[in-house]
Length: 141
Image 1 (spheres, rainbow, N blue to C red):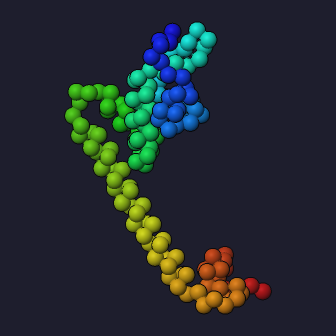
Image 2: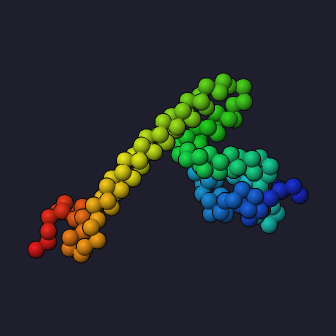
């Protein structure tokens, strides 16, 4: 049974900047525990749900995958454990972020080079269109 300190799903969504659908999904995938129900069978969330969902939202905002979030939550639930495992998850994620940034930088340079080849002629002569063509720049018949 819910208490008067409980939050509705809408209030929890608003408090965490999450949609109602996302909250329900987090419950289905086991990231957020199922809440108590009111006498009218409405979900009634408590402070622990608010804290956990806020944690999940922040981790997701930082780009952690759902599996990483699960691992972090499991680690966070064991308050006496060394934080070395948490550090490992964060370091692995940082390495992935650095790889993605390098990939994006390479993509930026490639696009800049391609755009730099533009001579403002016709589309038939356009280097960008030619580069994107399945024929790799050969002219169409």
